[in-house]
Length: 82
Length: 480
Image 1: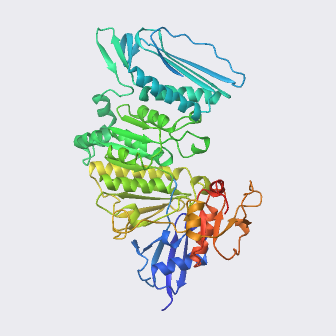
Image 2: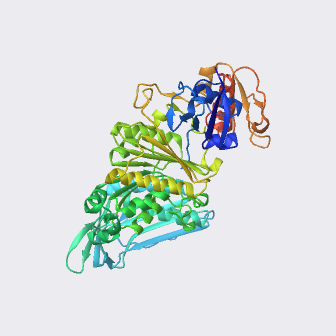
Image 3: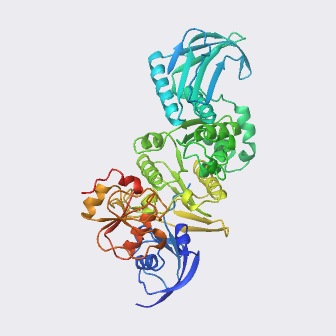
């Protein structure tokens, strides 16, 4: 296990709850799923982790995908308004 | 009360001490229709059905507009120019409801009550007239669409395809305000509109099909009127109801393309499933604050549930009313939805069927994220349908899941009324530690309580759930 630097972008309600749109951070999480859970706890994103989808480097990936060092990660929650 | 009459109609006097607004509408026989001179009209009704449908309509109007009373008398038989064909009378505490109810009855009457009208013209001709069917007008159509037909990708062939297309737009709010005008202007032959909502002042900053004068009126009626002013050759089908599990299949099956302009997750998911079952393409969009997302679901491509296999609780991300929304956001997303539909019908470009488009209108930045089918999708893959683990739909579900539990009310101290069963009050704004043990969290609407339950789950605590519907869902609860 080693620390990886990633850029994270928060969309919609996640951006509101995180209080910013983008940040670069270091994580020890191995997979995308672990990383989502880590951020939900760390920043009180107040959404069940199973409801948050992540795209790594431009493609949606499932939770078991390994985090790549230097990745661009976009976190997308359900969006309801219309 | 709804009646048919063979005798000439005269308005009757009404009085009520509690009603301040009385509206009497008289519909009369006019001497022209569609540029032809009309001499007389003949109304024919299927009596029993007309009366039963009419009574239903009147009862619905009374409830919808909180009328004190509503009465409709419709003529049948032969009528000369100047004679009264229908009288609608409404009484309400205030004038706004009386006016709105009266007009709603008239609009609905034309669609729902089986009364047919035959026009006798000065040239000796005569004909039965459909409720609102627009007459064919090839010359007008040709002029309206001449600039787009110049595009090689459209041409006359493309215009014929547009004319033959039937598009259903679910929800006539902010997304529809961006989408509907362009679908109508492009010459889509048939547009279906579904919405049971009335225009409210708080809608107008984004729902620009409507004006201040439309407040209190049915959105589908006003949207249909907008569409037909822009392009009178479009056939508009108005459905003043909500999309439900019962009617979704019927609606989806009757159209070629479905546009999701709804404002809630359950409707979006319901549409996704119905479109899958019927092999219909769906263009779905949703908005939040300054941001929006858009994707197209093709019958053989990845669906919305491939992306979100766990069904979120409907309040998990709040609503436009709670989060706020910039008016141009649904407008822009709605236009992009129209573009997807036009792409699909005409075959130009590339649909967003394997991508999700995210837009941030603060920065003007867009992201296009690729997505694939999910073998674990509960709709098109082999997965089981799992709901948001943080929410229960009722107190009985809470009992079934947790057994014994404590109720925690996270509303702020000034929120009323106090709930009657045993509970702990811990306001959301200052919430830190929660009691041990099984907890059912409640708030006013179920949004804040869901955040608390999600926070607990993320921290590894699985014995905390939020009650859907908030304190109102506690009302029938008898503690054991």
